[in-house]
Image (cartoon, rainbow, N blue to C red; front, side, top):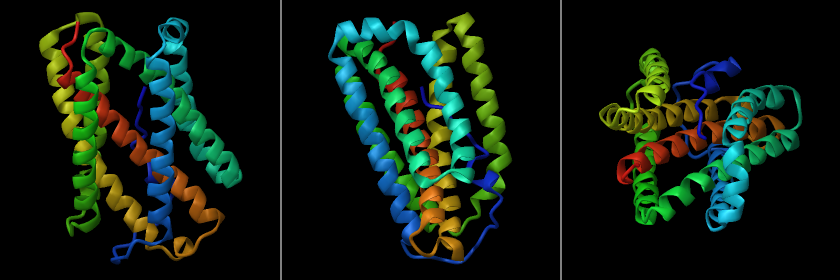
Length: 242
């Protein structure tokens, strides 16, 4: 479902800027695009989760859809570098909709097992943590980029642990993975917010235009992934898993 491209914004090869900025055009657009991406995912997942027939149809396709999501995330950067903002927006919303399909199947499982309250609890906790860490990332004077290597190693370790536990099926390891996932994506929210703030201070993104829109879509994707991953790991903690 959610994936994370930690190289993300740095891969655009743009220089950092340490100047303090107000809520500039790039920042406004990032959160606007992120909101509509999350709204798309929420609408699609809610529609799927309320239909057992749709779940039965989509469930066998979860793995192919997951692989497609990975390629869409990888391809979005290339699309935004070479294509128009419109093409980037299409890829972004297609990704958000596909993520809604896979999340809808997951939600149905929780609802069918009487765990619908876990979904609500995970969402509101995610929103609170995300909002708090966004504020931290935007206002802190600490250079969070010095932790980038740690975040990358933690992401790799988390991915390996997930693969290993697919075969071990250890409840204890699953709990540890969920806790680490929550802590990691909470920290990454602040890290990515600070990186986007630095981009917003660059002259090329000081006005609305194609370059600003394309970077805003990519920044929105990064924060969208932070939010979705944080939500999923919290859901694993709040829900009683079979």
